Image (tube, rainbow, N blue to C red; front, side, top):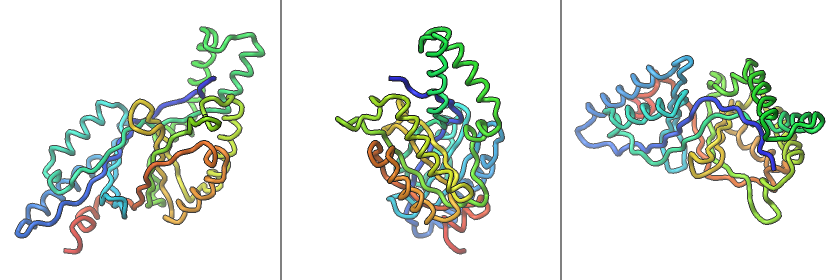
Length: 271
């Protein structure tokens, strides 16, 4: 069995919090702490090649707030964690959960094409000539602008809603994704991608890999024009064979982005 070629981009950390209950006579310190959060988010809103962070108000799901951090290295995400946990506002946001992953672009169709080429040229998959072919092709892919945009995503301004969930591919008897031939996996993923492309302009999708990083195999972060678009897309994708037969899903978190200027009014309520 052959794993698909994958390109990795920014590391990604989702953090979830509840708002601490308001304490009588403590409104001044609470307001000051949330202002500290606003200032930190302003600093992190756009770091260029070093990534970005955003704050989202979560509705339901046992959490009130989600912070999303894109960074170029695990070390820089570690620094994010340290600054969040040591900041004055940490007393106002009660940690509930987090999820670590890395943005990835899986290239099933390209992998199948390269295997076909290698077989035609008498190159053994996994050999040194194969690795040279792969390295050259991956460098060519990395030079493409749309690939860089996929690996280093930003949230479109016109898509203020967010949906996050983790997922696995099944490994059951008779439903084992990892025992299927590469050509079958590539075909199903191509059909699955065609479904997603019909939502272009309504939903932007970030796929991040978490094998060896967290409890699930992948995480999906969707940015949408309307929360109903998430429901429509995910319902339609459930009928694709790759989901209907081979996918398992974790919990879903849905909410909306909080602009930096609106952090205090969103978390503290109207003044």
